[in-house]
Length: 161
Image (cartoon, rainbow, N blue to C red; front, side, top):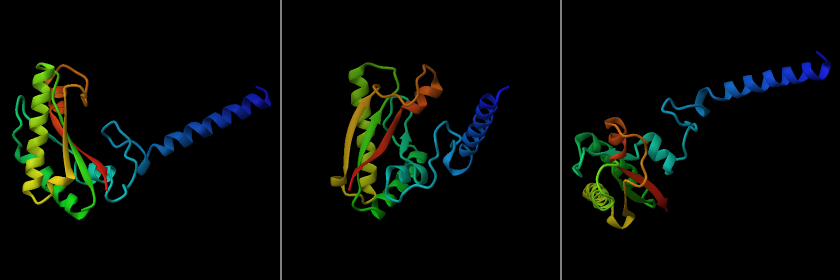
């Protein structure tokens, strides 16, 4: 090996080790397939996702909130009260089954149920808008119960102050 080849080999090894090291700790993988990004800034979408939960899930063909969903929304309501200048859009989503029209209507019922719950917990309705994406924006691609269960959801998205 000549000097240039040896130097490139050493640099490549250092680069790989540095890249592997940067994937551990607060800036690495979050264990769910995404980047953890470290601590979030209070009052941001990242803060909502990491410390409160930004989504609730629904049973098949339902817009009823489960006890687990209500727990998440209780935390969201407290978070929204803490950050009174924040507005959110509630996105209603469905799994791939059913017609486009039916799923748009179901997604709207899911977003509306989520909004009604948050308003009932003291969040001003003027801070909450809703939109339905039906089955058009799946969180997970797949045609099985696991995928469908993750796609039947309402997601709270911070839209502004």
